[in-house]
Amino acid sequence: MGQFKVNKVNTRHTSRRPGHRPPPRQQEPRARHLRPPSVMLEKRGISVLTIVFALAVLAGASFGCTRPPASEAPNASGPAAPQATVTTGRPVPTSTTFPAVTSTGALPARSPGGQAVPPASGSTPSASTSTTAGPGLPATLPAGAPSLGVPILMYHFVDDTPPPAGPWSVGLTVATGMFRQQMDYLAGHGYHPVTLEDIYAAMAGERRLPDKPVALTFDDGNMDNFTKAFPILREHGFVATFFVITGFVGNKLSMTWDDLRTMQAAGMAIESHTYDHKNLRQVDPQTLQKELAGSRETILQQLGVAPLVLCYPNGKTDPQVIAAARAAGYLMAVTNLPGKGLDAVSRYDWPRVRVAPEDSLEGFVSGLS
Image 1 (tube, helix red, strand yellow):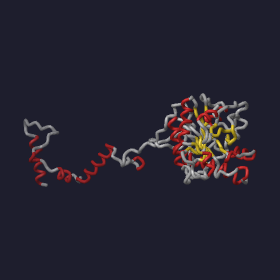
Image 2: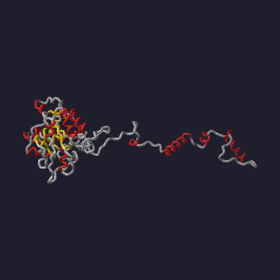
Image 3: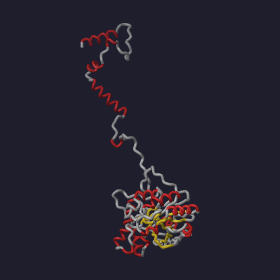
Image 4: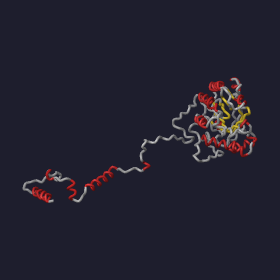
């Protein structure tokens, strides 16, 4: 302490010598007069730890070094991948490539962005009141809706060997090579496959059918529809309608729901062939409800689209069955009756053209005209 006072006196004395000019205030004193900063601060009652803490606080305030909220913290694995979303329809992975249906100008029954949103997990959709399927068709047709002469071709199995479903399958199996010839003929002669919903929309005045329209339908949902018919349809850019028995989906002879989703994503229409393929004219009201509304709701839950077209088992129907189909939410239905004339009044009784395995190509062509 005494040395400190002597230095202070000497400094004051030196600064007052005659003719001496004091050094600028910003200049440091000579080295022999310097004291360690810690000593100087301690003399004034200020600890080094206090200064360090103050500087740390100031630095944090200056640079905004505050912890972000947990919700804003960056992801350690990098930015989140964008979600593949669509405004309507079953969510589709971004890696899925849909085949272009342009080689013949065919109208897709279900575009990837035109499907209904699947029901939320845990919800119970009402298939009988849903009208979100397909292109959003009106529930009724206007008075004076036009009749259309569109042939609806009826297939069951497409394979070189009939499936082991019983002896009756032999008369329902079209050979794969013949089926390819038939599709080649349609493509080469200007025919444009459409769905039954396209036909209904044309009757409603909401869509114009292409030249030489034809509808391709497949009953029962057998596995060969996916392994044999579907690849040939894709090669030609064609759409078709597949009537599935929902209680049979996934068994050893039938397509799975994943198969049906693949076909739906490619533009095929998946419609109802009831739940258990029972004769609807001979069942009780509860079973009739299950066969019609139950199968429709199952397809809605599995594929996100409520079917609007019903195919009667064995083509058998009556006024009571038609009333039940209408109440279940179907807008039209097809039978096994032969014919090509389609009109609004009989839209729950539309005829079809059976494609038989014994038909030659000439016989197939005669069924188109």
